[in-house]
Image (cartoon, rainbow, N blue to C red; front, side):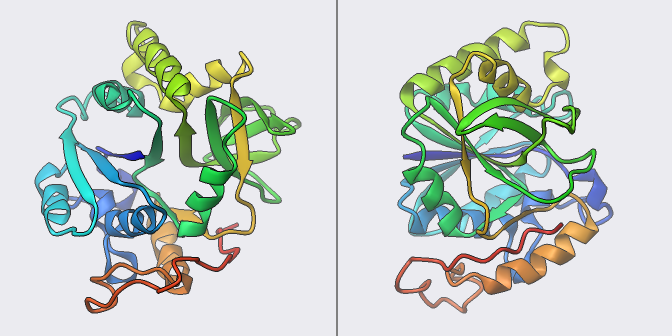
Amino acid sequence: MKAIILSAGQGRRLMPLTEVTPKCCLSPGGVSILEWQITQLAVSGIEEVVVVTGFGHEVVQAVVDNIEGIKVRTLYNPFFRLSDNLGTCWVARGEMEEPFLLINGDTLFEAAVLQHLLTDADHYPITLATDQKNRYDSDDMKIWSERDRLCRVGKTLDLSHVNGESIGMMLFSRTGAEIFVHKVEELMRIGDGLNRWYLSAIDELAQTGIVGVSSIHGLSWCEVDDPVDLAHAEQVVKTWPVRPPSETGGQEAAATGQPRPSATRRR
């Protein structure tokens, strides 16, 4: 299976760290976010990774060029300064012809998160990985779900309906990929398509009943949006048994490949 990682953004909330270095190349635990992601993908059996780049493409390419053991390549979005991540998905739509994973470039996750999603996504063409917490703020990508079906997703949902949040990871079947690409193309033809998140497409599709949810509650993940998140990520990755070779001095990752659950999401 292929994974597509959306890493075209700069990460302005992390300035000055991201003045010349894209967010995905920041290094919690001494290893880039991108390397952490690819390590967890590889140990979960993902065969190919496409990293969609934009800001700092050459920096990302240098990281990719040093990755071994899994097929990784980049796809450049020349419109990254003009579009949000719906536009980045539009650039990558030619990569979405088979079942695939879509992952935000700032989502860090232990392999157990991905492994859970892969085994829990047989019921819907599109499945969104989600988590739950006690309180949700304006920056959370909140969800409203009923049982295992996604009803709505967005940052401005009525809190009386909210019962989880997206972690920035989705799985598409072949049918789901076709439907998603069609919706992305449709929204990009609308006047505000360049300013949309790709989850606005998922929100519209969810209202047709074809999107499911997979709760990974209790497993370890975090996102990196600002300096507080980055400091938190430094602590989170220390708990993961599957570690990038560059972080472990060239040694192999954990022999079992079965990360232990760890509830380390920042609340």
